[in-house]
Length: 487
Image 1 (cartoon, rainbow, N blue to C red):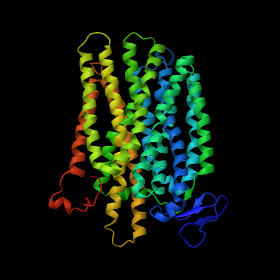
Image 2 (cartoon, rainbow, N blue to C red):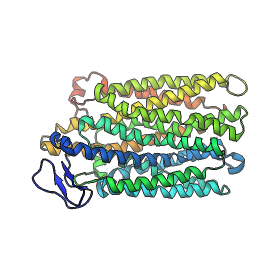
Image 3 (cartoon, rainbow, N blue to C red):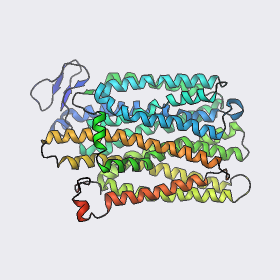
Image 4 (cartoon, one colour):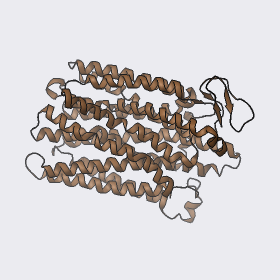
């Protein structure tokens, strides 16, 4: 592992000579070197983690900005109904998910510091576009979709940030570090929703430009902070070929599937929860301004709890096992989805607007899903480095350092792929809800049943792949390593 002084020279910890003369550049980084880690490596990793979290945080906020903007968009002014709004918030989810694949390899190609600076500045593009449209509501729905799609660049930041931090931390601390990095980023969703609440509560639901202006400043601060305090790693490797290699392992596809259930739920509900509640408040007789305020008062709670829970999911997985925590999480999510089904069926069977009891069940069910999806996000991502750490031990043609590098690079590649596929789950949630509300029932009941069935499938897959007692055949299967530390 190397560190660098505050000037242009990088010095080696545990090595014999300086290894670089470029600022903010570490030529050789070995997080598994305990002596070097304690001699200063952990401080370097922590500093990079802090600024990575901040940059990812504002990225998540920009990614989810349209979940807030729809609260400032009365149908009679902007001409976009509830179904149109569900699709509007699904578009940045889709774009952000797809961008996670190229963003995964960007930090290795351009440097973690360099890419973080660039990706933070790029967030100004959708912010300026959103600001313009909210001040000029006469534009076509297609124009709104285009600007919302550009906001997807904020979703790509997650993959580059997670891949970068994965390289900085040793295996024994990855669960906590990745959970903290992701949780700190995820919390960008409730923070922008809180800012939206503050604006609506103080000046009404017509001043969306204030939210955009706040984030123009924050994105600039993230870019400057990354430029001043983050580092590039010279031995960080990742490419699309490595990502392709990860997909040769069956476990990679399983992780991607499970991440649809955890992160897909978190981001999908983050974008959709406010809309579901706003529909119910409007049906209960609220004016658009009242519905926006009442929605904003509760919409941030679930994403906030889910974001806070994520690092604890990683920490619990470090102690108990990623497989077990993931199984328990999906079982509990099945029960929470059952609450939503129950509440919606009661509402369907009752004439008029939803009762206070039904609304309470909906809120409790959604908040439980947010909290549990946060825990699951942390536990699923803990499994990733465990998979390749175990598989690396079977690569007898590599020495210890090469095995560690292989494991780190493969983990980074899978983090990006799983993040992309998981994000698509958020698209699915919004599209299923849209279809449910457009059905003859005009309610979310069908969608809630779909979500419940999917969580049941995730319970079975988690148990089958990671926790069941292996048979003689599966124990010898190269696609499953018996050394996997997931239980």
